[in-house]
Length: 209
Image (cartoon, rainbow, N blue to C red; front, side, top):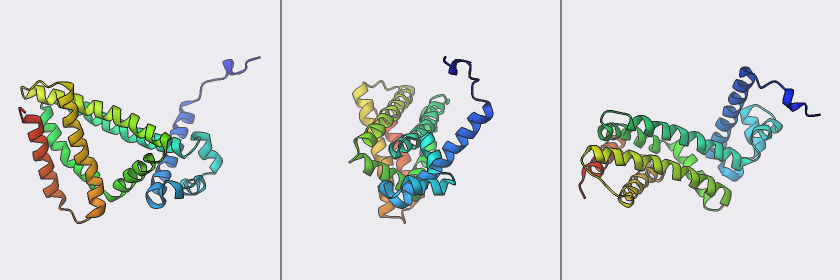
């Protein structure tokens, strides 16, 4: 007899507790990955930092790759939400330029940079992490390309997909490169750099060529 059919659905409180526990695990794993690297961040170490047993960790995540997938997904959801809100603004170009300063600051944050670089490094040698990173990148880039399309159309330009993809790749390279630069040169002038990035974005969106 199938007893699951009559089982009551999880309560809201149970769902909330599960969400809190997942967040605890992801926050602990994020700290471990930054300080110990992917391979140094054992499940036992993550569980100690999260304040729960390893069994609890495995209840929510099958392995460290699954934890990375959740961290990447959490970051992706935040980025895609920002792009969607940006596209809904009255002046997409100016809003994009204004928000880019915040993006520069985010990519120059040393802790955030360490995590990004650790995940990318693991993706270079771990096919499963590479798949996770690639899937997230495809989603993020699609959102950026659509944002650029709208911004360019508002400026009177109509571009093919190849042109918009190239623009998006250049902008992505600039921001992702900041994570490397902040490790190499922690003394970067952030305000000057943000202003220069804004000039590049303005030119990219407004240039007819």
